Each structure stands twice: as C-alpha cells, then as structure tokens.
Length: 226
Image 1 (cartoon, rainbow, N blue to C red):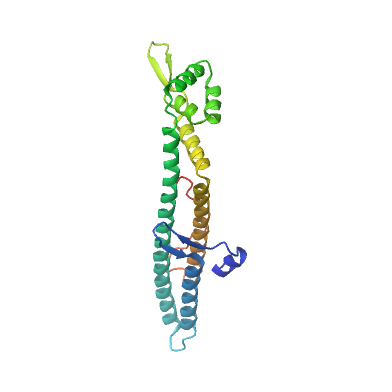
Image 2: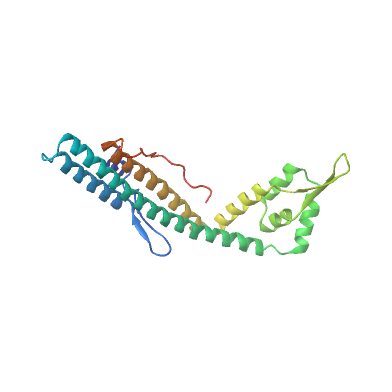
C-alpha cells in the first residue's frame, strides 16, 4: 500500500497537527511531497540512458538513503510536535486532578468516611473508591489498614491500590475537563495515523533498493501511557 492508497482509503483523516507554541506539520502534505520527490528522482534515474545498470543501482541506493534521511528528519520533527501537544494537554488533566484533591480538604467528613470503611472488606472499599467523589477518594487514599501477622509484626496496607488511585484520578480529571480529554484522544489518533503513514512511505522508499535501508514497521502501538 502506498501513501496515496492510504489517503484514498481514509479521506480527511490525515490532518495538520499544531502544538501550543504554533509549530505545525501537514501530515499528508509533507508525506506526499516526500513521496513525489522520491518518485520523480527514481523515474529520472531509471530513464537515464547514460547510466549503466550498475550505475543506476548505485544511484538508486544513494537516492534511497537520501530520501530515508529526509523522512527521518520530518518524522522526528513531527513526533516532537505530538510530544509537545500531548504534554501540554496532559498538563491540563494534571491540573484538574490537583484541583479535585484541593477541593477535598474537609477533615471531619473524611474521618467519617474512614470510620465507615473500617467495616468493609477490600472489594467493598474498592467499589466505594471507584464510585465515590473526590472527598471519598481522598479519605481512602490517606488511610491504611492495620493488621497483625502470625509472628506479631504490624502490617500497614493501603485501603486502595496505587494503580486504582491513579486510574480513577485520571478518569476524574478527564471528566472534569472533557474538552482537554477530547484533544488528547484526537492527538493520539492523529499520531497513530502519522506513524502508519510514515511507515508506509518508508516501505515505499526501501522497496526501490532493499539492500540500502532496513524496512519499516508500519503498525505501531499508540502512546497510551502518556
């Protein structure tokens, strides 16, 4: 599948990405320009009657390496824009999470929640944490269950696991600023399409001289962790 095949298959999906500082990349436009430049130079080499077969092979290998370098430069610059954009929007989610924590400073209410949680088992406390508001979550986060082991050691365990805390806070932050959550999802989708497009272009280039560069992997996993 070529760059044009991809764009024809997903019309309108390859868009312009812009970070918060105004840096931008026209994903399809740049990929198409690189593809067109490569295709035109490749055709010129193959049609040059002054070159021997060996000369054509060497010229094509040189062209492939040059085009791959240009592709890598564009890919690095565009990835930097995505990284900056996602970091900016993730900052908005982190700010929302911090605000949710700050809003839950009612000490007496949190104390009542902790007292009620003492009579619950681990599954009930986890369900309470998932369904509760910021005050409930904060109360459970700062509480540890105390138990005595068979050898007499005192054991302290959190009421809720750290993974659940992070997962729930992130979701709460996304719900608090849905426009930011949408921007993150949209940027990640564009980033995934960008990697597929860049990988396809890399394969198109490499196919002209397989020994000149390593083939691309066109399918990548999105950066869910960011």
